[in-house]
Image 1 (spheres, rainbow, N blue to C red):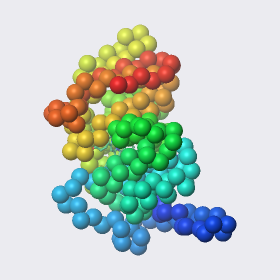
Image 2 (image 1 turned 135 degrees about the vertical axis):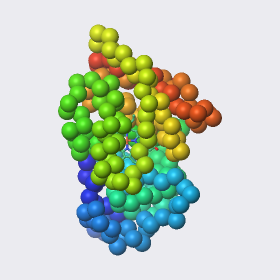
Image 3 (image 1 turned 120 degrees about the vertical axis):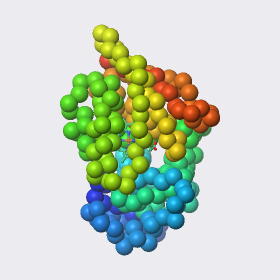
Image 4 (image 1 turned 60 degrees about the vertical axis):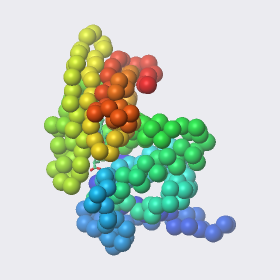
Length: 244
Ligand code: HEM
């Protein structure tokens, strides 16, 4: 993962046609606040749900890896946001959703995809850089279900140690089963940010890291007015992922 943790990447500096190639502006902040950040990041967001810059850095990583920096620049322009995110900053969650939604509109491979599908795509892709950056969360486990069950007590707990202002979702788990090569768990998710599609994508992406096929069935959803999102997840060795 290129950026998360200690540095903020800025926009690509524009270059004229036929001029020098675009230069990527990188601001190293090492958990301090850069001047770029102080101009942009300090939110007037008291009453708005916010998201840590880490997620914006991750999104940039996956877009640049899957496509290129030009697409990322166009996504920023389309969303009408400043596009400079420090991992330690907090930003309006609408910005993340606008970026992800804009990606669906600009990227021909994703045309017609809903915002939720794009958020899920982001979650799936993001597990690759997350696994590179945080191998210790993955290494103790052979199965996705065991990794998922550490979300509250290990993974997000460690995130909170590193970033005390993070607002990680708390999951409840039920119906944990391990039968032969198949395991399952029901995730109960509640969050003011209602990013269940991201949770779904993270889960599917994590299964890929363990060589398992994830089937995620969304049984109830806060976006439909339910009090929680309930996702029945089943993990099986190999074969493609299934989700609904
Ligand atoms: C290496 C593993 C993981 C790391 C390092 C990680 C870290 C983080 C961080 C830093 C945030 C942002 C918090 C904030 O904005 O204040 C976040 C949010 C979130 N995480 Fe994790 N996470 C991991 C795995 C997972 C997995 C497997 C799931 C899904 C089951 C998940 C579900 C979410 C969701 C849905 C959010 C969005 C915020 C919300 O819903 O309120 N995470 N995570």
